[in-house]
Length: 218
Length: 241
Image (tube, rainbow over all chains, first blue to last red; front, side, top):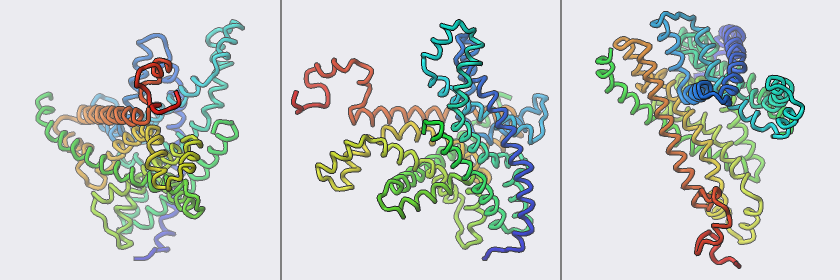
């Protein structure tokens, strides 16, 4: 069986459209949730109050060690039984957002722990309030430090967006599979989908490696 | 509802068994591939390093779902037809093996240079050098990241129902009608969580054993002086002291 160029021409625009419409949307929307929620979880885990630190810790550990497909099923098929009905895309953004927030919180944690003790002591010496200390001293340095790892997490998230196929989100691989099923020709659609992933993710990860070296902690 | 859940227990367990089997198969394949490409990545021959780099970047750069579908649905069009079992093992092995090869490479490169020089001074051949000196020191460093990868493989195995494999996520979907979606998937998540903790626990035990073997056990916690003064203690027997 050889490669069918005519079929390729026919399906390529559709697969690429799904990539721009859903795969990227899902990636960026989930990343935004993960970046905000991840910081909250990281700060929550550092809290002196057990009622805050323990739940933050448990959420991170539980979410990280359970599979995304089952989490998608729970939100998309399970929550309606509790009266919460969400679209497939919203469910996916919530699940990917929370899942990667758990990973992001670890990234933030490493970044916070890497702040030299002197910075905290200087803030105390200048009698900055805790809020000012975080806003003006700690977080700006944390963000700089965690940028490359954050980028890598978003690339990982990007590559996991096809997991949303299990609840029928019209992302790239779902569309590729539908195209393949129509003609019973799977070689072209899945190869195209794979190449698009490679073309999008490889240069980004090279960029992250460069960024890592430039920020001086390879 | 509780009665239904109890009735469903055998199905959960059967699915769990299949999930664990595929996870272990995938992990073994990934381990082999990690070492093959990890060792190739430190080869002095540029071509071998290049081949390793290319394959690793290829499998890290495309998605697990795409690889799974490609191997199972697209490969038959090129004349290679794999059973679901083989397709799943190959896909999990290649994807996570690509990540694992970086772990292997990193841990080997992190062994202090003096250790390498010592093996040259003792004129150990390359195989002995790796087996007796470098790997025993590199392996304890590899185990924690391998533990994380094992959990990733466990999580990845939940996609295998897409190939019609009757693992836990597959069985749970069958159970939805009997016990409801919310309890069914919640129970499944708890089972996955427990399995992941068991895997991580085993890896921690293994790490401790591997670290003790090269004299890096829990000794670090105690003051070093106590170890030196202990009669017959320490690994320095035969030293000048």
